[in-house]
Length: 222
Image (tube, rainbow, N blue to C red; front, side, top):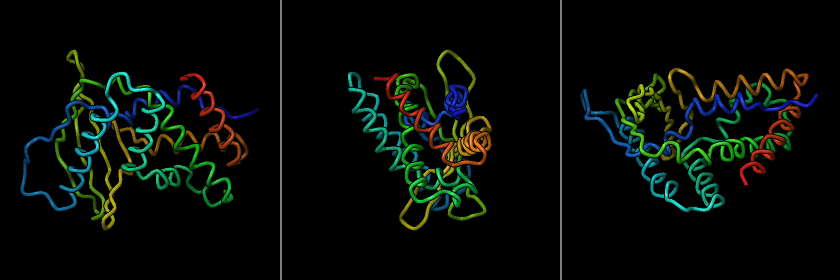
């Protein structure tokens, strides 16, 4: 039986609020509560703020054609997220077993799934407010966690979020998003791993499932 990526998995993705960083309006920082931030902490916070500004300017404009929103979303996703690194980590030990052709198609489908799954969710986040509460360095000096709260309209509870930002020289990327204690990367790794196990530890089984899901999403949103 062919493996399928269920709507339950996509709902879990939405709980992780991958798009919240793009759609929070406005996005601003709280005053510093301690001594001056380290260089990497300030860089990480500025990186998230810049991403939000770009997203607001390019993705929430009314009457923007869907194909243009997809194009802009893909560009931001690749510019700000470590797409290859996240995709490779999510596949885990199965990455080494995959052929070069499988790795290439998997990464392409992984990116497609993220982009196509969420491009229609942008408008749902307009008007919400994301506040940066603090930034903390990781024991690995190249990693910084940006802690934030997403304020929802109507007095609903605030959503706690954490953005893991990795800096290597001049390169800086988001490597994970955690919402209310749930990691985007860990959730994807668990779900993809379940599909692979169900398919007899076949990476090809996951690729087939990703191919089918991205195709159906493209059709249903056209």
